[in-house]
Length: 77
Image (tube, rainbow, N blue to C red; front, side, top):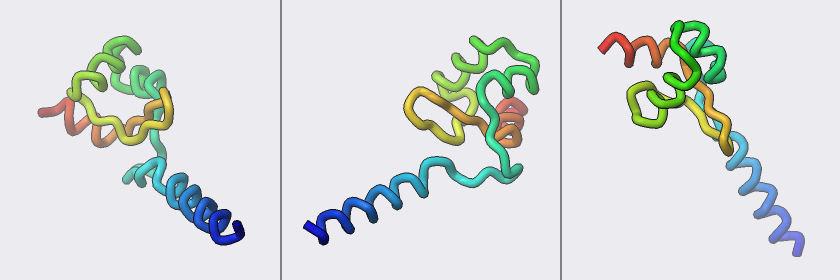
């Protein structure tokens, strides 16, 4: 039982350590913050993320986070 508990703790630690990749800016934005930054509506940001037009940096459940520099590069193309 102790071995199973240690394995479970190890698996959980590995899972939560990789939830969000490192951002070059050091901070990931919410969809609302990104919409204000790039001056698009919130619906447009969600649609662009859903269709793959802008990259999503991290997902956890329904929450999404964006790296502003990566989004700006995608929009410039």
